[in-house]
Image (cartoon, rainbow, N blue to C red):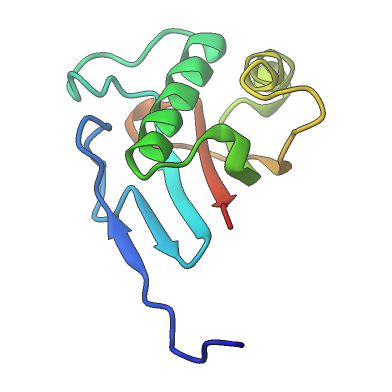
Length: 136
């Protein structure tokens, strides 16, 4: 039988994940859906550390930060159904970012995705990625 009780959102701040650069939660969960805020290539152990050099290193750090957030709520990359990627140097960085991004997902289990060029990101980052995950 269908439960008509409203689903209340759960706002998650994950211990060990990077400190947000603005006022937001790391993720918001409503029912089986998880919306993960865009992660930057910041070092979760030292927010003031310089960002990694280059798109490959920044993409790895972003993906690792996303894994930290997902794991803090009991999700994994296998639960991800959608990703949005933001690049400040789209033409230059798109191929290299794709190679790193692709290495994090199983063959045949790639999320739906949007990738856009933007004029700037916080802290001078060249990449940011947010996710939507689903787990029944």
